[in-house]
Image (cartoon, rainbow, N blue to C red; front, side, top):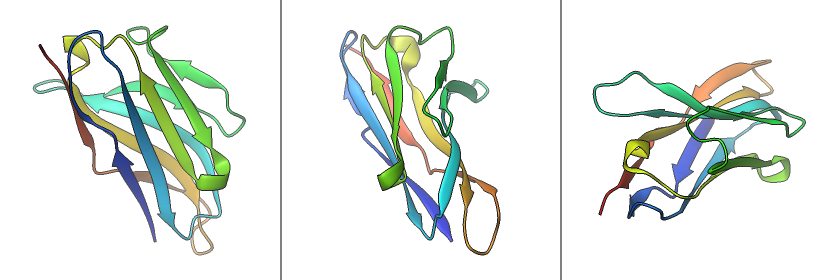
Amino acid sequence: QVQLVESGGGLVQPGGSLRLSCAASGNALSIDVMTWYRQAPGKQRELVAIINSGGSPTYADSVKGRFTISRDNAKNSVYLQMNNLKPEDTAVYYCYAIVQTPAIPWRAYWGQGTQVTVSS
């Protein structure tokens, strides 16, 4: 079984930075796309950034130039460096990944979420 474990959320002032991490634990053989989503109170979950197995990133327009997604395949991990944070970035951030295990060729997994609050 695979679990995605997120860390790095917290409270930060506008203009500040945070770095989120997500690691796949368990018997993951390979990971395809790795993605960060977020969900603000009363809003739908939205895609923030995605990185494919080759390391090519794609960003939502709202975070371009401020957020950077990266991955470490040796550690089965994905990261989200968030700079110049704004109050509208406040949300629960979720990690999502397509993972290959010995028992299941490919399956999607979600992390438990980590709260990011941007406030003065």
